[in-house]
Image (cartoon, rainbow, N blue to C red):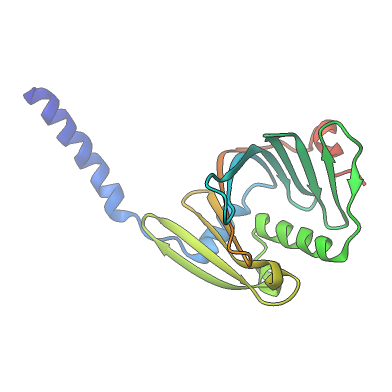
Length: 203
């Protein structure tokens, strides 16, 4: 047992210097971290707590973010729903049904906001939100408060948080409901995109 104790102590001594040197990330460092890869995919798990419901509504799936092209949000559970956001349009497909283009100015504004959010485009985000950034050795948090309609009519706040990647997005809406989205398994996507991937953003 003494040998095991010595081994554990040695491991802790190796870890402590790195822990002591850990410093909070700056907002510029977080922005660079989130925008480092031109294309990424990830898994998401979503819970929406709706006032009056005892259990949250749950969903899960995957996303593909290609900077300069768009965001593809593919819900797989509890039913299949694909949402494609580009700078020019927003479309959705339920199951294997036909793709529906959403031609609504307010929703297109929402689409632009989401692209700025996931693209870590601070200049674009500042058009929509007041930004409040906090960082500690444990991680960083960016709280976004909508500045004007239509977003301030829908959202009370959006909060992004993480460490070496984006881990959480928490959306508080004006109805008192809260949506918590956990991101995991971020992976770099090789460019150029495959034909199948490119089709998600086709006009």
